[in-house]
Picture 1 (cartoon, rainbow, N blue to C red):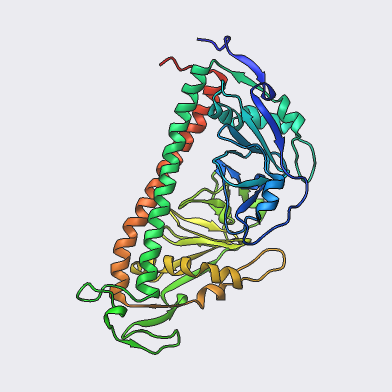
Picture 2 (cartoon, rainbow, N blue to C red):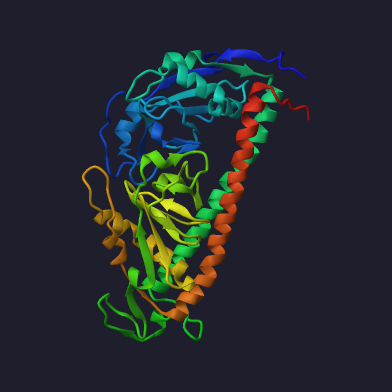
Length: 405
């Protein structure tokens, strides 16, 4: 079958409205209930966090746009081509977010996948302007051309790709729940000291004996140690850039948290002359610019200056150290130094003090290891699903693969 029956259309032909956000700065309000969204907040859906700027009702009513369940958003300034479906959030838009409402006789998700395809990526490359900060104007957005099959085939294509994305999102949500479970147990046992006593009751609130220590009141017979008492910390050192390659020569190189996705490591280059190395099973995390995002190494890696590794002296401490670092990461970030990029020094990590009992650590690790293994399993499945989606996407939207059933 050919796709000769497909039309070629411009984006402006399949949308009711197309525009961008505020060219300026609204009046922010720390306790505002409405978010100010730019292109960097778009990634499949609208992403907000504690750093996202807020505005009050007056600014919201003044600058809100006509967004509805047919709205798609695209980043058109700075980072180009990030796409999100509008989900009813109370937001106003900045100038780097383009919005448009897809006509009802066109499948909205099909248009989303067109914008995620190489067709749009190539268009961005050819028609964006600017040297330092790239920009794709609204005129160029309106004139973007792409293939459009009949509505039945649009729906079939969108359903296949959406089913993969839905499973990926389900895995992400499950992982968030599993991570929160492990963090909750860690805090209850090692921060609140409500680990189960010999009768299965919470230790501290059941009258468990507490003693004075340099960390405050802790359970009797518990130990205090620094991270470097129970592990070996290695700070990364970047190899010469002359040794970098993409030909799998040497070891894969980790330069920062950008090389991590979920609990998976996804390096972009290799080095033939590594300076520092982590072993399989070591914890690795970012220590420069983006700090944190702890992962477990699945094999040996070269460590660049943007990462550090932690190798437990005894494997039984691995999960305990992981969550001790994770629980302390906000304080580590707040205490990090650096005028341009925040940096963690080795002493910031090695001097971190922890409080524990060998018996409770073993019990915690038995529980948390199962949760972490499931998180990694979900991440690996999601990675395979993404690969399938990325293979299918260009073939489906170009008509190379036709869906008959």
